Length: 421
Figure 1 (cartoon, one colour):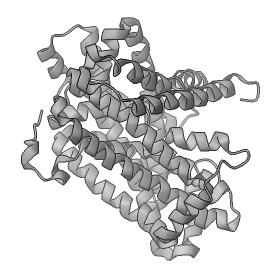
Figure 2 (cartoon, rainbow, N blue to C red):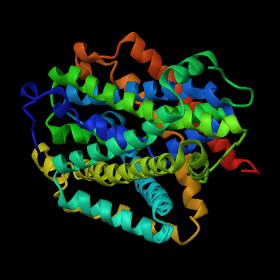
Figure 3 (cartoon, rainbow, N blue to C red):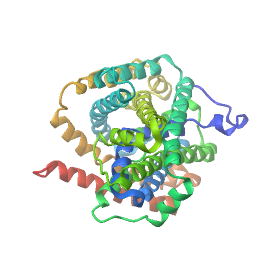
């Protein structure tokens, strides 16, 4: 594990785990949701992106505060206070999540790369990205991984935010976003989807393991972690706003409404006439960087979760647990292989319906569960200490998150069980 002498380093060199969360959390799903909602409602939905980034900040800050206060990851806290029945159930969900999301990320990378270099098929590009991401994780240290992700964030910023600034000056975008902010008729479901989708879900748990790699331990680092996460979710919000502004300017203004995975490519094609060839290429490159950072972050971060569960199931002491929850652990490398190889089959065959139904039904409960456990656990001064408990505002926003994510989960489950779903 690499420890950073934080007080002697400038702020930019101290930041890291939050930037990784921002890069990992903004993926194809976020871009597609922002493009679809922006094409339909224009500037009226910008507030939803900001609200989503704020809620995810509150949740991630609570996760990090638990770890700083207790010295244990949230997974360890769940196991200790919720019992081993939960542990087994979540482990099954994690395996399903990894398979389905792994396939989705591989497919998204193939699609984005094919848009840049169509000589190779979507499938070939997907295979390449899955193996290349695994290679970066296996061959590099955490510090090198962080450095690579920061480069990709720069590409994302230049591509997505740069195109948005070219399409609409900041003053105009902000003023229209404020003046036109509303809940359009018939748009509540889509808006809530934008709020809930900003910044990822299970990948939030990776932040605790990246904190450990950075050497961030103890309550004294609470302020640094908050700054790190604030930067992360400002960036997350900016990326989402950039896509929504582009959709409003390029699609909504021309009366074009898009849905599904093709929405980003449709917008890139129309951007040719609005911003020229350079703008269209910059947007495609920014979109590719967004999905490439997602697969890198998931491939690097999620195996820690699996290793943590295995260490807890085996009841290992603290020193042995740290050895197992490591990129050098065979458990880590085995799970990385599971994530990057079996999901390749989803590039060539229809996804198994039964697996997707189970995954979606259980996954719909994850975010309200995460917000609910943080609300409860971080309010216990006997667990986290009086100086690390959640305040009134934080608890209020977590309660709002439980209601929001609970509603989204209920809608998702209802669609799965309905005759037309």
